[in-house]
Length: 416
Image (tube, rainbow, N blue to C red; front, top):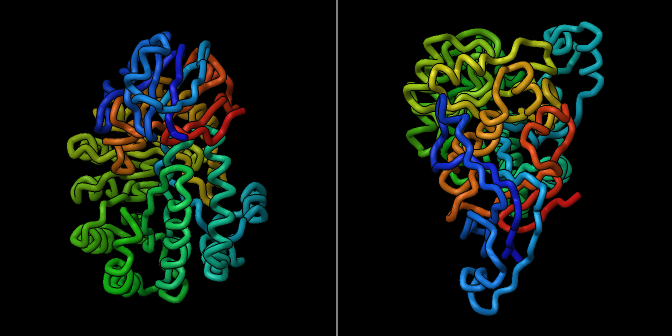
């Protein structure tokens, strides 16, 4: 049953069907003693709590529904984790220890670690293996209020394994626990067999992979970075993807200010992600073109890097989203609570901006702001009920989960 009536809640939500930019990110709609009515998985009513008898006309004669009394609780839209690498084979804890002991990424790669280690494990895994591992991670995301997640391929770097990863993502989506947004990231790295021949690998992606994966993936992503896929190769590949109907995402300006943000804006990308070293010109370009700036503070934290300049971006008129970047290498964490804490404490984002970044703007970064990311009639019934009556508990209870209940399309998936 996906008919649900939540009453006596403190409802806190952004509003709109597009990303909120700049000052707009602070504007949340608050309804005290609020109610949400979800019918057939879709929100039908958001407003003041009504006597029960008034609801039957909204549900329809003979309809059955579940009631939740949320008195003393904050109710938010479901969180959107708009950048993850949750489908992969193998873990890399020993490599993480090596990093803690001072080993460089290059020295780890020379010993067989790094992304190639995950590529090797993913090539050996079955689709069932990948689904089982990813669903284990997804269940933990749900317990932290995630109702929509983006999932990338990119640990195959050949046609067969990239197809296998996208098939696994498709199976996760078919389970319909939460919304799963598939992204093709064949240009995550240059595989060992193409070292020194990056342009040839780009051509392989364009001719052999992009046309065949169009139905399996909504987005095409690329790691635009010095020494990986630089500007001209990135432009060539992403223009080809766009011509086939893919929506575009970019890993951009993570390590050096290469101009990935500017390229993302130029090509009309939905989002540009990471952005630790974005230039002033890149900020201006994202703001002008409406490309969402998706920031990943957990990765900067895990790598001991400076955080992306969120305050500068928001003040410059950008639409900022937050995501976890869950992956087996640089950031093995899908922690929404720690993401919130880092955004507020180290990135100087207000809790209102942080909520918008993890809901409406995250939905926009997935091309889903028309049906996700805010509590409004006509949108999917994706709801988070907190254990507390104050949104300031989210950063204050540092790194700890404040979620009591997670609801996706009117179905209770988690209740503590």
